[in-house]
Length: 397
Image 1: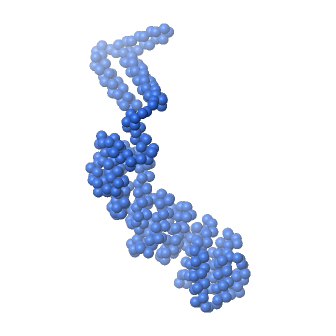
Image 2: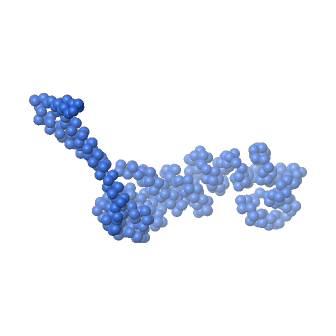
Image 3: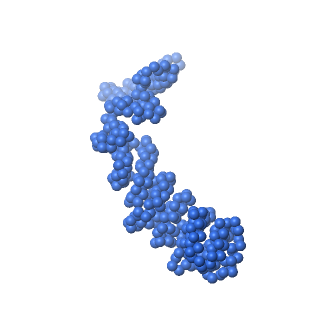
């Protein structure tokens, strides 16, 4: 369609230019057409314009009519040989059957004539077959206009070879590179592919991902998986890694508080392992507790408060009372209040709390602990038993 419009546009300019030269000094002429009760009067310019317009409409009717009849005929046609299909139809079948790897020679033969994609397709098959060096050689020979496609495959190969640092450099470059105009119609798919590669990199080297100069590169799923990997590999972090993690949280603090609850809990667990981020940990924990009561979140906050060098028991008790007013009948809050009463030497009030929630495992723990008195060896054994049954608690109180 665009090709047809361009042809008519150029032909019209040429025809009008030729007519202007021929009619120079003789006027524009006069045309009169009378047929039945219909008549047309104009200069020769108007007649030429009418002829071009009618011709263009006829061409459109012919083009769309031909396409329609060919498509309808194709539906009724009996196909006996795969080679009788159009190459695009053959590729469509291979795509629908998800058999690209089985049909490698067929696909490569089709793209042999493509100066743009021939090396890209060959590199993709070499990559799938595990021949990474040959794939990279094909990508080095690929057409400059296919630069983005070659880079995406190159990054995927680097990640497969565990050369994460190289992949990071190329991904950072692509993020700053302006997309080629011919790829704008598939920009969404292109961006999704880059996001997938960022996710693969983040899971492969979670601490290296913190070296990225941009934020928001992961989708929600890979973001949470990345945070989980940071927790798993936390003991492997260097001083620089921890500093980068702190900077990342401080830069995204307001955005993180708007993320899903599960993502914020993962960040809270990371902050709990960094004493220098205690203020941010407390703010995030209280923010989460305002959304709904989560025993794990509360315990992370409570444990942090009581492990301070000089715990502020008055502040802790006030927060517990506020939470009790918001969430009624929560044994965990009673469990925490007992520790505050014991620490502030209020044994009678602490003893009264032990009568509550007779079937709750936390309160059962306190009742047994109070009976053991100052026998530290037995208390340590008691802690081991309860920690095996209550996974989210780590009794450091």
